[in-house]
Each structure stands twice: as structure tokens, then as C-alpha cells.
Image 1 (tube, rainbow, N blue to C red):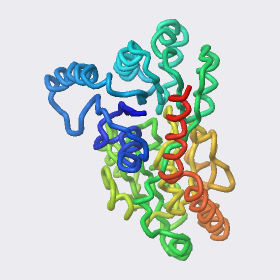
Image 2: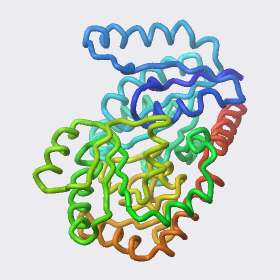
Image 3: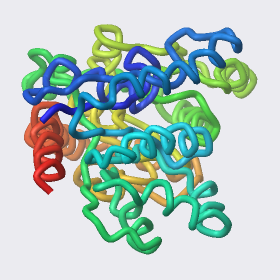
Length: 358
């Protein structure tokens, strides 16, 4: 059994690239990566245009050599058309195909359901199995009429990122005098950047030892910097995009993870990474977060968009070190036992075997 894994550039930012950047050297089965879509640092439109067609020609030269095709996609316009072609080409030879849907744009899926469901079914229901990151995504595919296997999988934490971090380091954080609140995601309105800034502005009125670390970049980066300046959010550092050792250092110095997203999430890797480093998490019920997050044990989850609600949860954690310690320990142990790369990889390779053996 040889597997061709069709994925985004693993050097690029984003959940799919990060997922397989972690797994690429850990597979025990013969898996080859096929990179498609926008390349890291690609900034010339004419190169993108040529590369778009070159991806398909490369695929046609390769695809007769593989038994199982794993095609990564998202429920978004661009992914819909680009990845459907790879699936269509692979199924022309009756190869086994798995479609892994990472992100889910509910506005787009609503349009698909209303106007183009026949087209989606004609293209994507050719797949022998789906993998999704949320029970909600699975329910929608079943409602649309997909009757073959749908597997639920999680995102993952890189074992290498954790290094020798352990429970002793979790305990050390509880005794720190300052409280560093971390927001680590793309800097976009839908990811909750402005709710985060408003939350910390409220907390600064009560606590002198509050600091906000913002790790990431995006279309709202400069606007968010200006917003913080105009609204007097004083103890904030904009770190830009972080990865590898730089990301680890940010997680090591952080104490609480704040992610008030209302974006169409799959299962955000950054939440799991924060938990792995012993951070209680305060978030909203989006995508795959709902399927595993235990509010009151791992942190707090709320439907609210109100910064005062998020500030209230953080204040509760600041004033109750015992509760913060319990959540920190629980989060670390939960990730180590369930969500590190080695555990998730075993589940993914089991899916490959099941689909191949039919």
C-alpha cells in the first residue's frame, strides 16, 4: 500500500500545513507528500497561475503509482474547486480516496446545500471515506446523504515542541507573580482579536500584573496595533507569526490562553498547544472545540461575545490559584495522553488501512 497525501505547502502558515509539517517524518507507512496550492512566500500572480496548472500535470504523472489518495481540503470556495479536481482525477482509476475536511465555512456550506448540493455530491461523494474534525461536520455530511465511512479525528501537538516540558514546569507557572494572557492565531476580527484587546483593557483597570501576548499576523495586524494604542491597552506585545523554538518560548511564558473566536474553526491546533503547556483556555463553542472541550475542567467556554464575560473568567482564575492549578495539570495530562502527534498518527494510519482493505 502506497499513499499519496495531497496537502498545502507544509512551510506555509495555516492549520493544514502545520498538521502535516508535524507528521511528515513520523509515518510508519509509505506516505509521500504532494504539495499543491499557494506556496510559502509566493507573491507573484503569474507564478501562481502557472503553478496552478503545473500541480495537476505533476499529479497526472504521479498518480498511477499510488493505492490510496488522501486529499486535504476545507469547506471554502477556493478549496472546493481546486481539491475536487484532484479527487476526480484519482477516482478515474478507481483508486481508494480519503477526503479530510479541516476548516468549515458555514456560510459557504449553506450556499452549497441550497444551490449546489447535487454538484458537491457528484464530485466529493466519490470519496471512499471522509475525515472531519467535528461531530457537527459529520452530521451535515450525513444529512446531505453521504453513507460511507466518516472518521472523526483531532488536530495534534508536536511531541518535539514540548521537549522536556513536564508537570514540574506547570507547577512553576502557578507561582509566577505576573499573568501573561496569550492570544495565538491569525489576527482577524472573526478570530476574536478585538474582543481580546477589550477584555485585557478591562482587566488592566483591576490588576497591575496583567500582560497580553499576541502571536500571529493577518489582515487586521496593523489595525489591531492601532486599536490597542487608541484604547489604552498598555501591557501588550505584538510578536508577529511565531514557530518552532520561538513559539515554545511564548507558550512557556504564558499563563492563560484567550481565544474568543467566532470563525468557522475545525479544531484549532493552538488551543491544544496551549493546553499542552498547562494553560487554562477561555474560548467559544466553534467547530471541533465543542467535541472535546470540558468547560469548568479545561477552562471556560461561553457563547458570549461580551468582553466583560471573558474578563470575568480570567479574574476568576487569577483570584483562585487552586482552580488554575487543577485546570493546568488536567490540560497537560489530557494532551499528553490523547493528542500528541504519535497518538493521532496511529489513528490516521489505522484509517488508511481500513479504507485500503475496504
